[in-house]
Length: 104
Image (cartoon, rainbow, N blue to C red; front, top):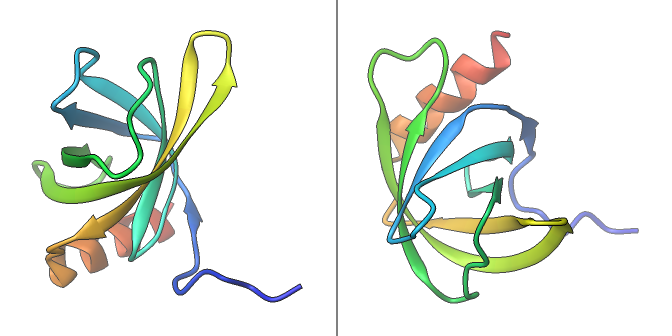
């Protein structure tokens, strides 16, 4: 089976703030240089543009990034797995996130 992903994924577990959304926080499952997968309590429409604030352990402060929802699947009762592709990405910020996660 061919790997469709352009960037390798790293398992991660940190808080992500999601805007706009009634439920402001989610918890990441994994991240790559191209996007992020996180668990969220509200369904998010594919195609929606989100402003995300990442609170990565080991980084001083937070990282703000914009992304487009590419999928939203039911994970378990009352939660969804939301896949987001980064858009207008600050490559240095993503590089710093990935290096920090890899150091754990």
